[in-house]
Image 1: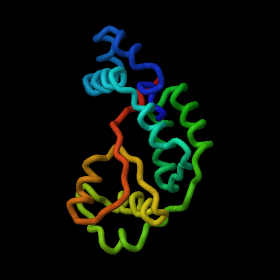
Image 2: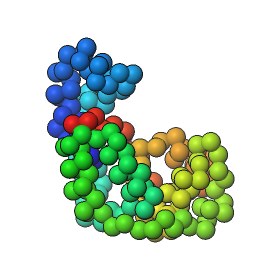
Image 3: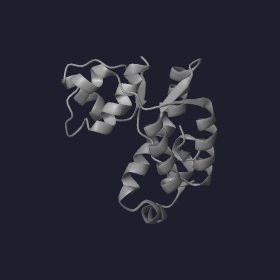
Length: 160
């Protein structure tokens, strides 16, 4: 929701000469191009806005801190401003994972303790967890546990 790619910069990236893109994004060049092409073909904000329409977004404290750190480190001025505007619309709740997740969901290489807190807090509030972490959602499902999740396509911050 904050990425420049999904906020009007996808075509600009695709028009940027490949050599300049490689200099800017180094080993992430191909991933950024794939995301930009995907965005042009199927804008992610349309999907997310349809899913979130009429709902109040909640975010647990640990996710908010991780989000702010990522935006501070990798986001450009437009992305940082978009992040601040998004934060104003969210209700921040303390990390409070459900007993069910903490006691029944085993920690694995894909479902680490941090993920248990994040997805468990969503479970505590009986709110779906909006995530791009398909592999974590799949790993949770493979344990037999059913959690409310909404998986979306990934969009990286691109420094705009």
